[in-house]
Amino acid sequence: MSGQQDLLRTLPAIDRVLREESLRNLSQRLPQETLSQTVQELITSLRQEILETGHIDPPERLRPENVAAVAAQTCREFLQPSLRKVINATGTLLHTNLGRAPLSSQSLRAINTVAAGYSNLEFELDSGCRGERFSHVEKLLTQLTGAEAALVVNNNSGAVLLALTALGKGREAIVSRGELVEIGGAFRIPEVMEAGGVMLREVGSSNRTHLHDYQQAINDNTAILLKVHTSNYRIVGFTKEVPARELLPLSRENDLVLMEDLGSGLLLDLSGYGLEREPTVPEVVKAGVDVITFSGDKLLGGPQAGIIVGRAD
Image (cartoon, rainbow, N blue to C red; front, side):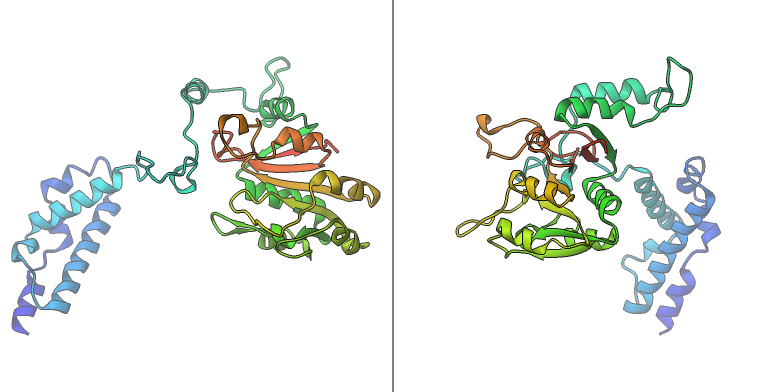
Protein backbone atom coordinates (compact mmCIF):
# COMPACT_ATOMS: atom_id res chain seq x y z
CA MET A 1 0.00 0.00 0.00
CA SER A 2 2.83 2.40 0.82
CA GLY A 3 4.23 1.96 -2.70
CA GLN A 4 0.86 2.84 -4.17
CA GLN A 5 0.59 5.93 -1.96
CA ASP A 6 4.10 6.98 -2.95
CA LEU A 7 3.13 6.78 -6.63
CA LEU A 8 -0.03 8.78 -6.03
CA ARG A 9 2.01 11.49 -4.29
CA THR A 10 4.33 11.52 -7.31
CA LEU A 11 1.54 12.57 -9.66
CA PRO A 12 2.40 16.11 -10.85
CA ALA A 13 0.10 19.07 -10.32
CA ILE A 14 -1.81 20.33 -13.35
CA ASP A 15 -0.22 23.80 -13.27
CA ARG A 16 3.23 22.23 -13.07
CA VAL A 17 2.59 20.21 -16.23
CA LEU A 18 1.14 23.23 -18.03
CA ARG A 19 4.43 25.11 -17.54
CA GLU A 20 6.25 22.58 -19.72
CA GLU A 21 7.43 23.98 -23.05
CA SER A 22 5.59 21.35 -25.13
CA LEU A 23 2.26 22.67 -23.84
CA ARG A 24 3.22 26.34 -23.74
CA ASN A 25 3.90 26.09 -27.48
CA LEU A 26 0.26 25.10 -28.01
CA SER A 27 -1.20 27.99 -26.02
CA GLN A 28 -1.56 30.11 -29.18
CA ARG A 29 -3.58 27.41 -30.93
CA LEU A 30 -5.83 26.11 -28.16
CA PRO A 31 -7.69 27.76 -25.25
CA GLN A 32 -6.11 27.36 -21.82
CA GLU A 33 -9.24 25.51 -20.69
CA THR A 34 -8.69 22.84 -23.34
CA LEU A 35 -5.05 22.37 -22.36
CA SER A 36 -5.95 22.17 -18.67
CA GLN A 37 -8.74 19.68 -19.29
CA THR A 38 -6.45 17.46 -21.38
CA VAL A 39 -3.82 17.40 -18.64
CA GLN A 40 -6.43 16.77 -15.96
CA GLU A 41 -7.89 13.82 -17.88
CA LEU A 42 -4.42 12.35 -18.39
CA ILE A 43 -3.52 12.66 -14.69
CA THR A 44 -6.88 11.13 -13.74
CA SER A 45 -6.12 8.22 -16.06
CA LEU A 46 -2.69 7.73 -14.45
CA ARG A 47 -4.22 7.87 -10.97
CA GLN A 48 -6.78 5.24 -11.95
CA GLU A 49 -4.04 3.00 -13.32
CA ILE A 50 -2.14 3.25 -10.04
CA LEU A 51 -5.24 2.43 -8.00
CA GLU A 52 -6.08 -0.57 -10.17
CA THR A 53 -2.61 -2.07 -10.66
CA GLY A 54 -0.51 -0.64 -7.84
CA HIS A 55 2.28 0.45 -10.19
CA ILE A 56 3.18 2.53 -13.25
CA ASP A 57 5.39 1.05 -15.93
CA PRO A 58 7.71 2.73 -16.56
CA PRO A 59 7.71 5.12 -13.56
CA GLU A 60 9.11 7.89 -15.79
CA ARG A 61 5.59 8.35 -17.18
CA LEU A 62 4.81 10.37 -14.04
CA ARG A 63 7.45 13.02 -14.72
CA PRO A 64 5.89 16.41 -15.56
CA GLU A 65 7.72 16.66 -18.88
CA ASN A 66 6.49 13.21 -19.95
CA VAL A 67 2.91 13.90 -18.88
CA ALA A 68 3.12 17.17 -20.81
CA ALA A 69 4.47 15.40 -23.90
CA VAL A 70 1.57 12.94 -23.94
CA ALA A 71 -0.94 15.75 -23.36
CA ALA A 72 0.63 17.80 -26.16
CA GLN A 73 0.35 14.87 -28.56
CA THR A 74 -3.31 14.46 -27.60
CA CYS A 75 -3.89 18.15 -28.28
CA ARG A 76 -2.14 18.00 -31.65
CA GLU A 77 -4.33 15.05 -32.65
CA PHE A 78 -7.36 17.07 -31.56
CA LEU A 79 -6.31 19.86 -33.93
CA GLN A 80 -6.18 17.50 -36.89
CA PRO A 81 -9.37 17.17 -39.01
CA SER A 82 -11.21 13.95 -38.19
CA LEU A 83 -12.16 13.43 -41.84
CA ARG A 84 -9.38 11.70 -43.76
CA LYS A 85 -8.94 10.57 -47.33
CA VAL A 86 -9.24 6.78 -47.60
CA ILE A 87 -8.99 4.15 -50.32
CA ASN A 88 -12.29 2.43 -51.09
CA ALA A 89 -11.41 -1.25 -51.45
CA THR A 90 -14.84 -2.51 -50.35
CA GLY A 91 -16.11 -3.37 -53.83
CA THR A 92 -19.04 -0.98 -53.31
CA LEU A 93 -18.65 2.09 -55.52
CA LEU A 94 -21.22 4.27 -53.76
CA HIS A 95 -20.41 3.34 -50.18
CA THR A 96 -22.68 5.08 -47.67
CA ASN A 97 -20.02 5.04 -44.93
CA LEU A 98 -17.21 6.33 -47.18
CA GLY A 99 -18.80 9.56 -48.33
CA ARG A 100 -20.88 8.17 -51.19
CA ALA A 101 -19.90 9.52 -54.61
CA PRO A 102 -16.66 11.52 -54.95
CA LEU A 103 -17.25 14.97 -56.41
CA SER A 104 -15.94 15.57 -59.90
CA SER A 105 -13.12 18.03 -60.54
CA GLN A 106 -15.60 20.27 -62.38
CA SER A 107 -17.88 20.31 -59.32
CA LEU A 108 -14.97 21.12 -57.02
CA ARG A 109 -13.90 24.02 -59.25
CA ALA A 110 -17.45 25.37 -59.24
CA ILE A 111 -17.63 25.13 -55.45
CA ASN A 112 -14.30 26.92 -55.07
CA THR A 113 -15.34 29.68 -57.47
CA VAL A 114 -18.52 30.48 -55.55
CA ALA A 115 -17.72 29.52 -51.95
CA ALA A 116 -14.38 31.38 -51.84
CA GLY A 117 -16.24 34.69 -51.77
CA TYR A 118 -19.70 36.23 -51.68
CA SER A 119 -22.46 35.04 -54.01
CA ASN A 120 -26.03 35.82 -55.06
CA LEU A 121 -27.39 32.94 -52.96
CA GLU A 122 -30.53 34.85 -51.99
CA PHE A 123 -30.18 37.98 -54.09
CA GLU A 124 -31.70 38.99 -57.42
CA LEU A 125 -28.92 40.74 -59.33
CA ASP A 126 -31.30 42.31 -61.86
CA SER A 127 -33.70 43.86 -59.35
CA GLY A 128 -31.41 44.25 -56.34
CA CYS A 129 -34.05 42.55 -54.18
CA ARG A 130 -33.95 39.55 -51.92
CA GLY A 131 -34.18 36.28 -53.83
CA GLU A 132 -34.88 32.62 -53.14
CA ARG A 133 -32.01 30.17 -52.71
CA PHE A 134 -34.06 27.35 -54.21
CA SER A 135 -34.36 29.18 -57.53
CA HIS A 136 -30.80 28.21 -58.47
CA VAL A 137 -31.51 24.49 -58.46
CA GLU A 138 -35.21 24.32 -59.25
CA LYS A 139 -34.83 25.36 -62.88
CA LEU A 140 -32.05 22.83 -63.45
CA LEU A 141 -33.95 20.02 -61.76
CA THR A 142 -37.17 20.67 -63.64
CA GLN A 143 -35.26 20.67 -66.94
CA LEU A 144 -33.45 17.44 -66.07
CA THR A 145 -36.49 15.57 -64.79
CA GLY A 146 -39.43 17.09 -66.65
CA ALA A 147 -41.15 17.92 -63.35
CA GLU A 148 -43.09 21.13 -62.78
CA ALA A 149 -41.36 22.00 -59.49
CA ALA A 150 -38.42 20.93 -57.35
CA LEU A 151 -37.09 21.37 -53.82
CA VAL A 152 -33.77 20.40 -52.19
CA VAL A 153 -33.44 19.48 -48.50
CA ASN A 154 -30.78 17.90 -46.25
CA ASN A 155 -31.15 14.24 -47.23
CA ASN A 156 -33.61 11.80 -48.75
CA SER A 157 -35.12 10.72 -45.45
CA GLY A 158 -35.80 14.40 -44.79
CA ALA A 159 -37.36 14.70 -48.24
CA VAL A 160 -39.66 11.73 -47.57
CA LEU A 161 -40.59 13.06 -44.13
CA LEU A 162 -41.31 16.56 -45.44
CA ALA A 163 -43.46 15.30 -48.32
CA LEU A 164 -45.43 12.87 -46.16
CA THR A 165 -46.02 15.47 -43.45
CA ALA A 166 -47.13 18.16 -45.88
CA LEU A 167 -49.45 15.89 -47.85
CA GLY A 168 -50.74 13.36 -45.34
CA LYS A 169 -50.42 14.48 -41.72
CA GLY A 170 -53.29 13.08 -39.68
CA ARG A 171 -54.37 10.83 -42.52
CA GLU A 172 -53.37 7.49 -44.04
CA ALA A 173 -50.79 6.46 -46.61
CA ILE A 174 -51.14 3.07 -48.28
CA VAL A 175 -47.90 1.11 -48.78
CA SER A 176 -47.19 -2.43 -49.94
CA ARG A 177 -45.72 -4.65 -47.21
CA GLY A 178 -42.93 -5.55 -49.62
CA GLU A 179 -41.84 -1.90 -49.74
CA LEU A 180 -41.53 -1.13 -46.01
CA VAL A 181 -37.79 -0.73 -46.37
CA GLU A 182 -34.94 0.06 -44.04
CA ILE A 183 -31.81 1.62 -45.49
CA GLY A 184 -28.59 2.97 -43.98
CA GLY A 185 -28.85 5.01 -40.82
CA ALA A 186 -31.90 3.07 -39.55
CA PHE A 187 -34.18 4.97 -41.95
CA ARG A 188 -37.38 2.94 -41.86
CA ILE A 189 -40.47 3.91 -43.83
CA PRO A 190 -42.91 3.11 -40.97
CA GLU A 191 -40.92 5.20 -38.48
CA VAL A 192 -40.59 8.14 -40.88
CA MET A 193 -44.35 8.04 -41.42
CA GLU A 194 -44.97 7.98 -37.68
CA ALA A 195 -42.64 10.96 -37.20
CA GLY A 196 -44.61 12.85 -39.84
CA GLY A 197 -47.95 12.10 -38.22
CA VAL A 198 -49.03 9.90 -41.13
CA MET A 199 -50.86 6.64 -40.41
CA LEU A 200 -49.51 3.59 -42.17
CA ARG A 201 -51.92 1.22 -43.89
CA GLU A 202 -50.11 -1.88 -45.10
CA VAL A 203 -51.47 -3.85 -48.03
CA GLY A 204 -50.58 -7.11 -49.74
CA SER A 205 -47.83 -9.40 -48.50
CA SER A 206 -44.05 -9.19 -48.41
CA ASN A 207 -43.74 -10.89 -51.81
CA ARG A 208 -47.03 -10.22 -53.62
CA THR A 209 -49.21 -7.12 -53.78
CA HIS A 210 -52.02 -6.57 -56.29
CA LEU A 211 -53.92 -3.53 -57.50
CA HIS A 212 -57.07 -4.72 -55.73
CA ASP A 213 -55.15 -4.63 -52.42
CA TYR A 214 -54.77 -0.88 -52.82
CA GLN A 215 -58.38 -0.49 -53.99
CA GLN A 216 -59.79 -2.31 -50.97
CA ALA A 217 -57.68 -0.27 -48.52
CA ILE A 218 -58.83 3.17 -49.72
CA ASN A 219 -61.18 4.96 -47.31
CA ASP A 220 -62.26 8.50 -46.47
CA ASN A 221 -59.08 9.06 -44.45
CA THR A 222 -56.67 8.00 -47.21
CA ALA A 223 -54.37 10.75 -48.49
CA ILE A 224 -51.43 9.06 -50.24
CA LEU A 225 -50.60 6.02 -52.31
CA LEU A 226 -46.90 5.51 -51.59
CA LYS A 227 -44.45 3.51 -53.71
CA VAL A 228 -40.94 2.82 -52.40
CA HIS A 229 -38.25 1.60 -54.77
CA THR A 230 -36.37 -1.27 -53.11
CA SER A 231 -32.97 -0.25 -54.43
CA ASN A 232 -30.89 -2.03 -51.76
CA TYR A 233 -32.51 -5.48 -51.91
CA ARG A 234 -34.59 -7.71 -54.18
CA ILE A 235 -37.44 -10.15 -53.55
CA VAL A 236 -37.26 -12.79 -56.27
CA GLY A 237 -39.31 -15.84 -57.20
CA PHE A 238 -43.06 -15.85 -56.60
CA THR A 239 -43.50 -12.07 -56.56
CA LYS A 240 -45.89 -9.36 -57.72
CA GLU A 241 -45.86 -5.60 -57.34
CA VAL A 242 -47.98 -2.80 -58.75
CA PRO A 243 -46.04 -0.24 -60.81
CA ALA A 244 -46.81 3.44 -60.41
CA ARG A 245 -48.39 3.67 -63.86
CA GLU A 246 -51.09 1.21 -62.73
CA LEU A 247 -51.68 3.11 -59.49
CA LEU A 248 -52.08 6.42 -61.32
CA PRO A 249 -55.72 5.88 -62.48
CA LEU A 250 -56.62 4.72 -58.97
CA SER A 251 -55.11 7.82 -57.40
CA ARG A 252 -56.90 10.10 -59.86
CA GLU A 253 -60.28 8.40 -59.35
CA ASN A 254 -60.04 8.87 -55.59
CA ASP A 255 -58.32 12.29 -55.55
CA LEU A 256 -55.22 10.89 -53.83
CA VAL A 257 -51.55 11.87 -54.02
CA LEU A 258 -49.36 9.31 -55.78
CA MET A 259 -45.88 9.50 -54.27
CA GLU A 260 -42.77 7.43 -55.01
CA ASP A 261 -39.45 7.30 -53.19
CA LEU A 262 -36.80 6.36 -55.75
CA GLY A 263 -33.86 6.43 -53.34
CA SER A 264 -30.80 6.59 -55.56
CA GLY A 265 -32.09 9.20 -58.02
CA LEU A 266 -31.00 7.84 -61.39
CA LEU A 267 -31.45 10.40 -64.18
CA LEU A 268 -30.21 8.34 -67.13
CA ASP A 269 -30.70 4.71 -68.12
CA LEU A 270 -27.31 3.11 -67.47
CA SER A 271 -28.24 -0.42 -68.54
CA GLY A 272 -26.35 0.16 -71.79
CA TYR A 273 -23.16 0.39 -69.74
CA GLY A 274 -23.62 -3.04 -68.19
CA LEU A 275 -25.48 -1.93 -65.08
CA GLU A 276 -28.79 -3.37 -63.95
CA ARG A 277 -31.91 -1.60 -65.21
CA GLU A 278 -33.33 0.88 -62.72
CA PRO A 279 -36.26 3.28 -63.07
CA THR A 280 -35.14 6.84 -63.82
CA VAL A 281 -36.58 10.01 -62.35
CA PRO A 282 -37.71 11.37 -65.76
CA GLU A 283 -39.53 8.08 -66.44
CA VAL A 284 -41.40 8.26 -63.14
CA VAL A 285 -42.27 11.92 -63.71
CA LYS A 286 -43.52 11.10 -67.21
CA ALA A 287 -45.64 8.27 -65.78
CA GLY A 288 -47.61 10.90 -63.88
CA VAL A 289 -46.42 10.38 -60.31
CA ASP A 290 -47.29 13.49 -58.30
CA VAL A 291 -44.30 13.58 -55.92
CA ILE A 292 -40.92 11.85 -56.32
CA THR A 293 -38.14 11.85 -53.73
CA PHE A 294 -34.51 10.78 -54.21
CA SER A 295 -30.93 11.37 -53.06
CA GLY A 296 -28.45 13.83 -54.50
CA ASP A 297 -25.34 12.10 -53.17
CA LYS A 298 -25.47 8.66 -54.75
CA LEU A 299 -25.99 8.11 -58.47
CA LEU A 300 -26.15 11.86 -59.09
CA GLY A 301 -22.62 12.16 -57.72
CA GLY A 302 -23.33 15.32 -55.76
CA PRO A 303 -23.27 16.37 -52.09
CA GLN A 304 -25.62 14.80 -49.56
CA ALA A 305 -29.08 16.10 -50.33
CA GLY A 306 -32.68 15.03 -50.59
CA ILE A 307 -34.56 16.12 -53.70
CA ILE A 308 -38.31 16.44 -54.15
CA VAL A 309 -39.73 16.87 -57.65
CA GLY A 310 -43.25 16.71 -59.01
CA ARG A 311 -46.36 18.73 -59.64
CA ALA A 312 -46.26 22.42 -58.78
CA ASP A 313 -49.61 22.29 -56.98
